[in-house]
Length: 447
Image 1 (spheres, rainbow, N blue to C red):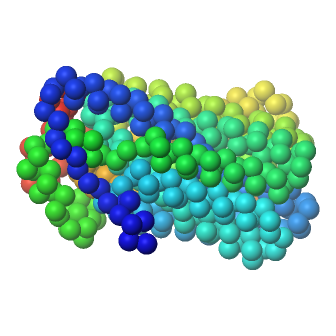
Image 2: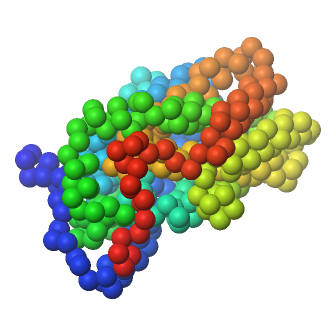
Image 3: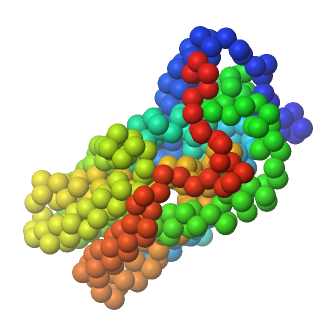
């Protein structure tokens, strides 16, 4: 057990001083880490969203009600959000090379066990186990994206990485739909589980932790200063850079609202389309355009925030969030069941939603300190998935009382409120307490 726990320790290698080698290693590891984080987090999506796309089959074959589905979804998001915050605190201290793969491995096992079950309580048990270890995916990625990529380019790097949400989200309905069609809903849970277990092994080989573990200098910090900050206790870091940071709270509240919209469309979209004349396979195919739109939205949002607004995320957040209102209204107002028009509206919602979905996470890391990146993004992530939880059981109650008109009215209200909150950060580049005022977050020598 002791040797197993030793794997999670972050140990620094002997410092490299050759500027050319520093530059070469930074370039190599930035690309390698991005590829591994990209593939790894995309597969986290396989084991997270598999349930979403088998819900129509569970309703029809296992006779589970919409309210039960909503309850499972809400509890999943609550547990996931809490885990995201706790693992964010841990990931700042532990080795991402082993922390992230272990979480992915257990989510794969949980999916397989879910597919072997036939009772509502077992479904709930294994899905909540999955929820807890799902929280081990995002914070290590946020930590590495903050520690390996400088602020002036981070929007683009983070934007590229963020498209893994969309690749995973677009592939999973196809994998689940085809698996469920040929072999039943159980196989649609087993296959993502096996993929996750294989990918977890690959991550152990491909990932590394912060630059110092490879002997590289940290971004924009002298060695003595970095060691002082690392020595701060977890409680001090949380208080100084998270709990008393007003910008973190603004971002967290906005994230609640953005995630209500994102998750409601993602989780209830297939049900909405099947109730409007689509088959399950056709509905899942149409819904995959949500992720396609998100792919391009993430790339454009990162590029705009870096180049047009010089690294300030507030303006881009406001513009994208305001545009969500029109995209959601278009889907609501669309008559009939024209596949191309529905796909276009869902594409537009994904395109606009994934701008703030990504940039709020970047902003949370940037208005805090780098050594609290996991805790800061985990904290706002907790609020995000409280919002996701609201899209489960509470939205199911809205559907019961006010039907789909009430559903869309709630989403539009959330979009407007999120826009107003993010407007408060229109001119915010970043927040750094006085003790950290000299941290420029620049490139290390030679990188």
